[in-house]
Length: 340
Picture 1 (cartoon, one colour):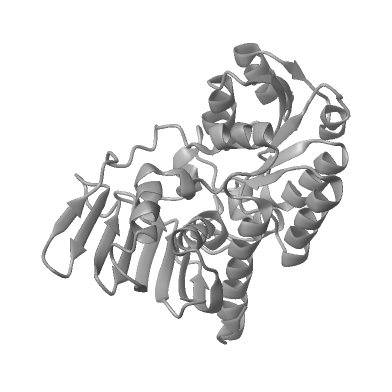
Picture 2: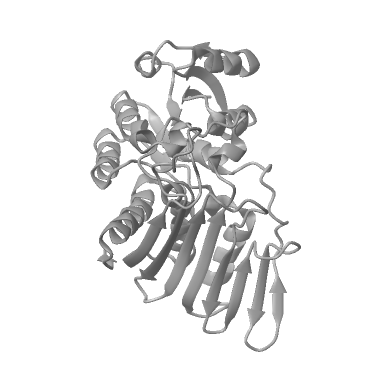
């Protein structure tokens, strides 16, 4: 049985990590830490386990085998590194770090300590995306020439129990980055996963268009971002990330290949549609998107610990996505095309 510690008991831990660990028969929730102790106590009362007075105390517990780091962005790297040095395997929420050097250090420490490092990039596990990977590997739409992928919703406040526009999500000193790192990193990683190649060149624009703090000031991180990516094979595409889609969320991807077009979560009835150049149409097996369904991240993480290797979304592949995020930020700040 794998003993799990939770560092940070905010929304992502309460809605994803903790209940999905609880549903997995190969692990047990053993410990919790949260700066607001009441949140940790609530989780311990509901799911069992012990509340610790500090993250350091939780990491010093020899019984705990692995931890989920579900804190604000600014502490991801330090806590993950401390956990690995304490002998724990680490599942860290995205974005993995606030700087490229921190992200690289996380990967280095994982290698040094022999601990597993996984990042919560859940798009890889969505049923239509795993099915799409199969079609792409069989060459059904030929060579992917271009693509567009979008992740937009009404913003982090939509998922809060109490709307708080002064939340750490909107403050640069805690979040470092906004929609591009929160949502865009998912879609960058998805393109890397589907195409099996990395980004080599980026041009981007990040802006704060609408989100305001409770005092009425524009938030200090981007709420919209559009990134033009070029991959290793020369495929060109756009990644759009937005916190200002105030109607129906958009989590769609369209791949344009030499033999046809693949549409993922772009249709309300079919999660995967392939329109081939010869006129034939293929529809996928997966159901339409359901945000209430299990993410697949926790089950893959537990299987990874059992297997002794990260099966998907390991630190190194997440680092590739973060390089693209940081290149996009640099491109927006300088107005230049950035080569990775």
